[in-house]
Length: 86
Image 1: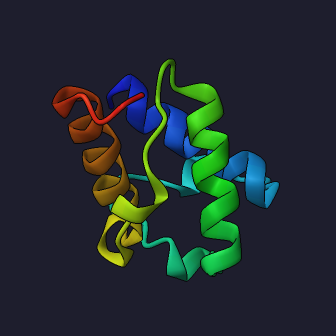
Image 2: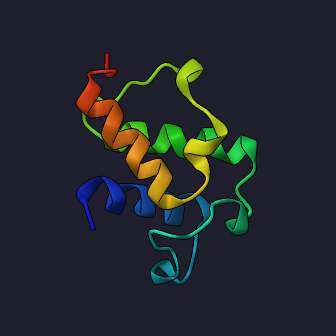
Image 3: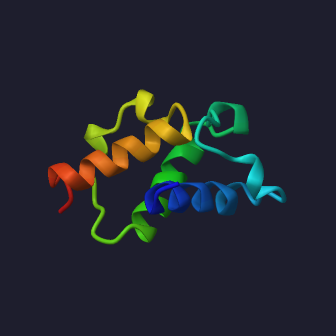
């Protein structure tokens, strides 16, 4: 697991107040956890708070970025690599 993936999983566990954090993994579908569009925004804000220098334009967010933990990790990692951070 990458540090970004760990940060995302930690944010999901915190947001949903999960008692079994080990139940969230790379292939976990966010929709299956009950994360709706409002919670997605909260989740992203938590991730931004915990990833140094991450500040992504909300207009660049797409539903496919929030499909699974893995897709969200890939999006955040790619954003950092491409310099989409402010």
